[in-house]
Length: 365
Image 1 (cartoon, rainbow, N blue to C red):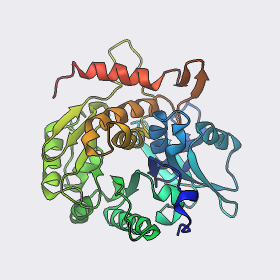
Image 2: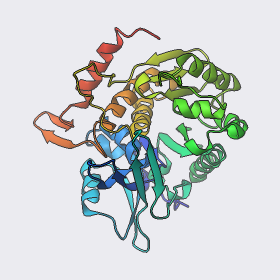
Image 3: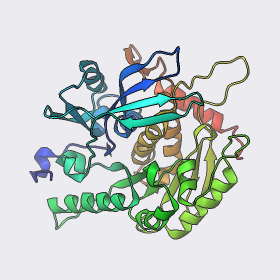
């Protein structure tokens, strides 16, 4: 449990904190493509990346995440984390190996995954006082664990000063894929009341209802079915006041925003390429987590005040964040020049402006 200390001396401003795990991946492709190792992975780093893309120093220090570094933690990975200049809590655990994952691509491009070392999940006890008072949280968990995380985070925040409860943080929940099943739908409906935004991908959304949200012949997302299922969840109420949102991440189909009074699609930044052109999408892994990091920071900073009134701006930021996450295996390259930061040679704000211009011509499907 975080140590209760003097608020004025210990609490540093944090806009975003993820409780996603840090994993070091090794990725095995079909021959003749060579395998790659020591790849930064996991929901924690990718969502932190999404927030960090919109947080050049000194704002980078408002991005919080936790890394459990085992005895085998690679120096080059540590250097990358340090280069980002975030409020990353590095917990040295020399008695264990870092959480590692094996990823294998088959001939159908489907990705298989297994843990090579024991995983170390994060919960509220990992939070320092500064991280505990983040303005927003990214949670990736089952429905029942989501309820536990939210309950404990809010309780710990109130313990600092019971006479003056702190403002409620914005809570963004990403359901874990394995438990997006019909048997968990009742628990999901209960969990919705504890968070401000729930964000499954289209397959996970369908999983809760035992339905397939892609066309079996074309592989395209069934956007009408996505809308129908979102409507069912919204009618049950999202958030403590019932006015929260569901944001469905739908890969190349973009994302779908749904509240009681809003229904809107946004396109993905990287669109399917025409014949003769090469796609900039190299590996979609982490795109959804990156989206949610950019999305959460957009809820905090995308308007005059933080909150769900910034929902569409937040989804725009999330879409741009996802675009950087999927242009390579692992993390995008951060460089500096006279004009400031670039990621993969591109300025985030320039890509954001380009995407916003494109939205002016986008026709709702």
